[in-house]
Length: 62
Length: 347
Image (cartoon, rainbow over all chains, first blue to last red):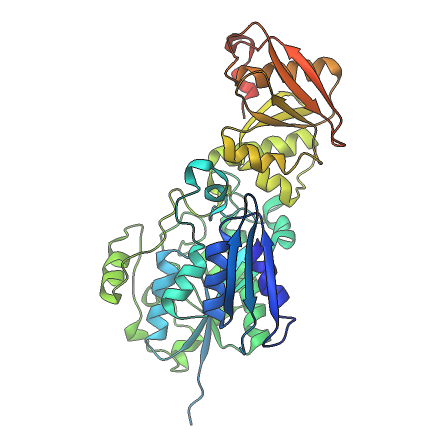
């Protein structure tokens, strides 16, 4: 589940670090931003092409 | 100065866990949510695959619920550990392959471990006495407390006044009088409480949130175990059982046929793990071949796949067979007729 992988990776990062998740699941365009809002991280950009979905985020202070 | 007490809530994304959180929040307790991903969750997966559902708004209900409640949500992948629960549940299965009581014990135990590791004080769930036939009965709810090791640090706010007093109540962290006494299968008390809280939306998963409660899914999983002679499984097995048409012509192999474009794209992601068949002369499904088969069985498999194509009434259909290295060749077959295909092959 992509949001779990993002969660676990972010746990190893510092505030201000950036992460881009590349996923085949279109649900990430909702899930990862929702997870970010809940946990105090910032979505910088989202995009998609035919088969992949990209979410770039900045790790917050929490 | 009083200590800020903290509770971790099992959050499925359904209404009851949302209500349980809000009831405790209103008593000044800091609440964070925990959600466990077993791999068998109904959440979002099939909506993300099927073309007809592509434009439907997709949301993870646990995340959505946490956002509505203003709480953090910790999602824990328990796929590997959960295998023991599915394969050999101490308390057995429900109507299908749903090990609900063992599942609840397991999840509450994991929540207890999280609670202890993070300095939280107690656990809450949205359970209601008498609501579920296995895990939410008056005689089985104590089993959850004992076998998970949480004992009286497990509070069920919606049903607490029907249950023995817990530690949070005895310690005065929460007031018992402000907890509820819901019981039984009626949803009316929950709906009334939701209205009082101003909740206007929540998840209502038809048939439940777990594929293991689904008869069709469970029969496919039982078939998988029987064909392998083992109850083990991998994540890919769980995912593939949710998708497509599964047809088993013989004990040692089965076909997984896409039923529409989205499923076809999803199954194509497995083309390096399974040999594949694709109808090329007519519109038709993409299929995976799970198992080692002879050339004769391959032609039989091709005839089955052709039967589900737009060439099902044609004298001949062409399919492309590809092995896991991508080596491809054409097959020309007569589609199998419905009369030739025993219904018991269809899982």
